Length: 212
Image 1 (cartoon, helix red, strand yellow):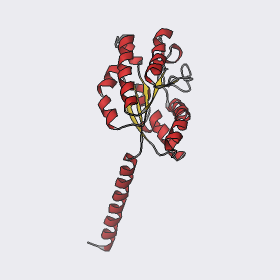
Image 2: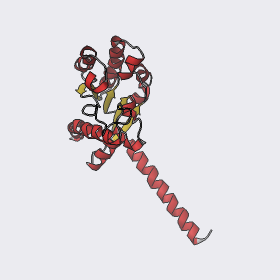
Image 3: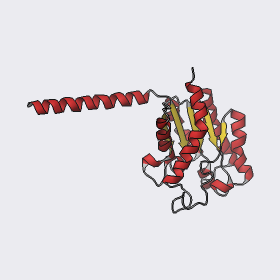
Image 4: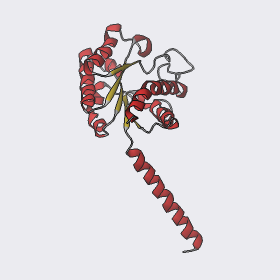
């Protein structure tokens, strides 16, 4: 083998070794788990423009060493998310953001079913030691839900020790500059606003967790 090929192979080997080391190092970081529907999954935009991906970039820029994992799934109901709970629990997340419930109405799940499905998720994560953030849903931001239905999220957060946060789409609803043509899902700029809001909500907890 020529000297050039030898050097090239050595360089590629070193690069692969460094990349594998970086991936392993990232895998050891405490996890922020995002569980939700299409707004969490990043419907309509490139993967790196979803709000969890943009949150990761913001945290990296601040030197906050966490790994954001996106378990959003377009069309997910609370029952579907409950069915994959084991995947999330296996990550042993330190923080969990749950934004679910909108698709339950279209799939005709009752208010009681939605609340109990969410209760099981929240309570299991809390008992496992995670701080859980539960997103509110309201008629103004998420379409059609009356005040009574929306209040189940506040009730559940208080009952199970979760932190109630505003709807992910707070401040986006009705704004064509921040939504896709369907006027329902955020565009990249809309997801950036969600990511910045999540950073502001999470940072005090993340810094507290990092303190000795």
